[in-house]
Image 1 (tube, one colour):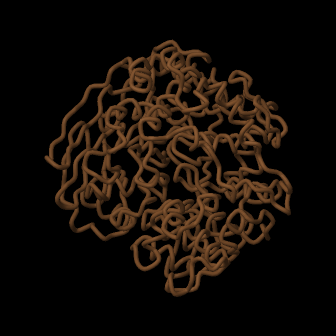
Image 2 (spheres, one colour; image 1 turned 45 degrees about the vertical axis):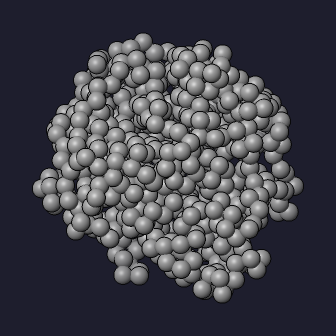
Image 3 (cartoon, helix red, strand yellow; image 1 turned 90 degrees about the horizontal axis):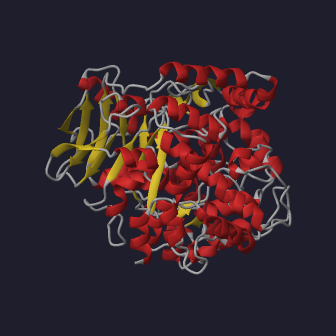
Length: 618
């Protein structure tokens, strides 16, 4: 096998046992790696009665054929399990250097089951694995845990993925952190680690799989680099330069001007953006570019902070600036940056954390959440309270115990309509307003993990990008047609590949043919644009089938009123996406049953998922 080791490490923490499980070539061809392969490997475990925080819930860390191959922007890994936040399929991906170190151990991934009777960490290196005591690390933050373990194993090349106190305390949206503040942030997979008493995974090694045609791969990479600096690639060059200079907060200005940046808990879209954009960050602090493995972009940030006793922090990213900033009507950069640092160290998803705090502010203004109930005032724009609430959430103290459950459960426990809770299928909506792009609205409603701006990022298309091979092209961003819904489905198919290869979505690899040529060079298998797109469609439908098994129906493909009712200001003034029309086009393209939400038997069989078809349709 080329591009793969062909095996994963299987760990049973209850029995303190490890074993090697061989991977089927057919599964690798059909599901590639990352979250696609994880979905195939975990499919049989995903049942409605599976407790996400129980020992039986398998937790997978999976790489892909692009990992460590020399393909630019491919230093990523996927973390997957049943989500404790949503109770459906949970997945998150992260950049940095951990993925390449994991693949260098001689395994394509690690799957953990069971529960330890005491805190442990997993040490995997050069084809072997040890389960070691981590009692001395329990209660520690991510950064101290990372630094301690690198010294403890005595290997400078070692990389660490770990949880902070939020994962230990089973915060429903706890993240798995790695490297320089990188996060597998969404879906609460840090809580799954915490439930297993697994504090960290430490990896390193020198075992890399062979590449079938390294010369062809190098030629493809050179062609990619040449295209990026050609006249036709000027947009890509400008985008890359912008990300390198300002990081993802470079988008903050654009988001406000086009109405894509949600403010004051989705009730506003106009705000003083110059106080929190990428330029403001650079003017207030010394900010440096940080790259993940093999990345020519360097959108990560290292910020010289010097406040709250913290010398420097990783980040913040766009999603974090928006969630602790305009979403909470807070324009104090010091508290935004500090809240971001606390989330990194505690191990918290900044999107869900910021959304839960903004929801609390919204409910406080309405009088539903009072000072007596909360134990403190939770007013719009109070940066000090935001910082305090982040700490209370991570420790599950006071009102933080409620906020640690996420907006869906907050609404349930306070008797508030789910139409006021900004989530889809339990996952908090990211910092891209669905009123700004109709195609994004339908992607939110149908994403396999709940509201997600990366599964797929349709806002990217309607800002002027055409991918004709995928039959997707830019258009009127407010268009609410069945054709737009169908294009959203096709775009999801292509982007699904990125989570399987794995590949950063900022990558300059932008066409199915480019993906196919590189995948062929690495594996020796014959891929073309059509087969890779079919693979993406297969993976997407498998994840949908998992969610159907877990109870998802057509009724769950919806957006809450708070996120789509027309605003009275900004670039989206008066607009609300026609979800019925968009979804009809989407369902027709997918061949999903309109009444139940199930993928049609014929579609599943066409994609080679006959066993799944039998499970869903009998």
